[in-house]
Image 1 (cartoon, rainbow, N blue to C red):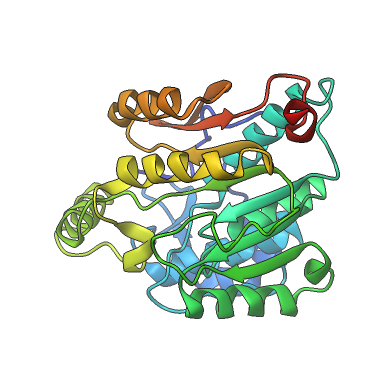
Image 2 (tube, rainbow, N blue to C red; image 1 turned 135 degrees about the vertical axis):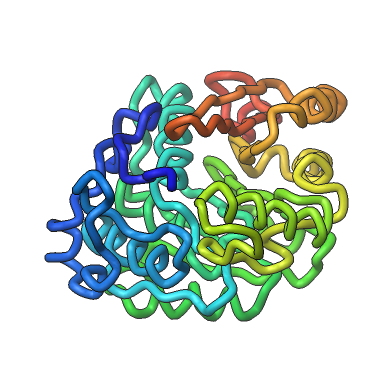
Length: 310
């Protein structure tokens, strides 16, 4: 079995997960994790990353130890995200915002998380690391209830994170960005697969890669709206780009993860057609896994949307 506990190569320098998991420290902070920790064949502490209960408990321990989130729970079947990779997106986004702020990471930024999910992971990390304020949107009412329960259970989060339901499943920003609102950035982890069948096949591959045979990989879970949409991530991001033109003056940067590098050409064409003034491709890596997010803005460097409109 691949050992995800090895040193995390390629993570952002500010990422708190650059080193091996310190299971002794994590178990001291979150004793429930101890049930899942065991020696590996070479004598190092590890856990079964194909076990959904183990993965969820590890996330609870990481969030408690590193981010002060003492109470974190998600309903069965919802996406249980890998915390180190999600933190990387936040740190690289901070660098992007610093480029428009004299090289300094803004501490009063407002961020919109499209598809916040039941796990609420990006707001939890971003508010702790940089003091940012978040609005999280989602089409799934149960996901929002779960995210709301996390916010309510942890003192101080209600002042930094608010949630809004997207009532129109065909919309992304419409109905979420209100009149006269402004965001420093939007972020999104779009649905990856193009169909339920493709999502099932991808989960089966993940399970084989973890060394646990065939069948569905439930360690990270995921609902339909989290895992797939018609056309997959390329179609979703193209929709996002097209809709973002209507909110060009209300966000400095629009961003989205792009899991598949082969989708970049069609995304870049869509950005050109939309008239984006600036486009940035930000590379990320975790071990052998390569990822990136695409960022676009309708404002020139050094200008706010309001100033550019004059």
